Length: 221
Image (cartoon, rainbow, N blue to C red; front, side, top):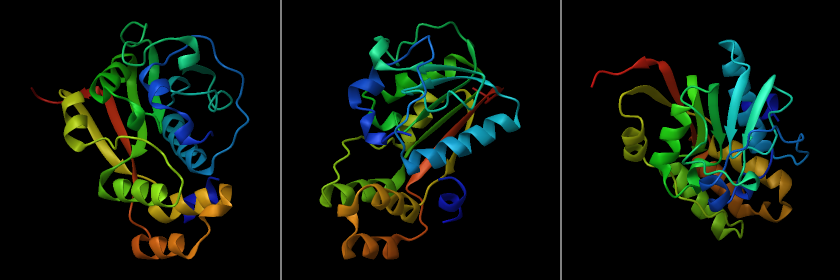
């Protein structure tokens, strides 16, 4: 729970399947005012990781302006500008870094999306999404509780296919308890014995992950 206490964005489910599959914009959007504690934790984590290595220019694919005040240059890739996130209209290495937050799980062509994100980044590409068996369990539980969040949990083999030739790692980030307690703050209807029973049974198991791709390191063919 330290992550929640230290890093308390927009609802991740507001990034619809179409918005994630079709997205990218050249002009920064005004700073968004909606707030979501789960993605705020992720924003803080990604900001810290990028600042540590001197990154200050990013493209946020599926972004709605949440990171505008954290970096000097932010390009928000959003469907409202009518650009396909799987066919970004930028040359290779156009940005220091590319990121996506709670977006990959809404994309039909996840391989194409990741390949494009990595292509336009010069140094690093970071993506947070629900992941693994716990990610699936928590999505099923939320739907059972009436909090529907249609998505396709990214699979290890899909990531491996997209990242062929690149050095990457999958870093567990955001536990089941953090995720559900944050949601319960926003949606009082989730505050039921079933929610806390699920938290107790799954506690500090991870339901989300960050995919980190280092463009400066290549793997052997």
